[in-house]
Image (tube, rainbow, N blue to C red):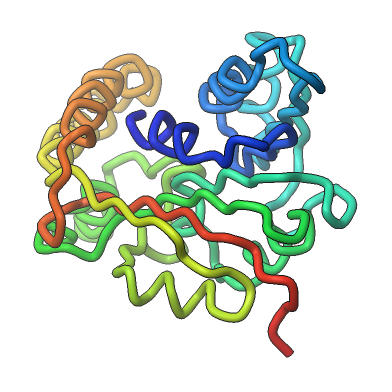
Length: 245
């Protein structure tokens, strides 16, 4: 996704140790590794962490030279100060509570380290979120197959304003850079695919194959700066020295 490229380009120049927190299939993890593998100085350490065992196994098969760990964002199995930067891309909106995950990110980052996070933006088209609309429809039409566990919100796929993130990060991090992009035009496409595959065809496999159409549109539109009309929000924040009391 475009947010991966944006987050990687926002990494501080001295970054060598990166945690991709919520790495899924490892697509962003391998891109970070390649971006940092410049041949100068110390070799980069890039680790992917993912809770879903299927995703971890797929990432290990696809990129056996990288380290992928199964674990929870709320209980990171790493020592304090282990990383220069943490990527938390499209993760917070799925968690029951953001606080434990952000506390763990603060712990494993070195002082002054960078947090790169992306979330759905609370803009004018937040109501069109395909995962939320599909979930609402399924409550009325129970024959629709459920969302995958990695797609579900808790209980909904949350959207955030810049002020919301500022409050969540306050005391642990200071926001340094913000981008609001895309318009949510890919959401009706994803909703149509969900209804076709999980409703009419009743096939999760069909959706897994066809959802790359949604990804392609999502990728293209996320390249567009959209300001307050945006659908996606990306933030870079710096770790503060002291955690809140």
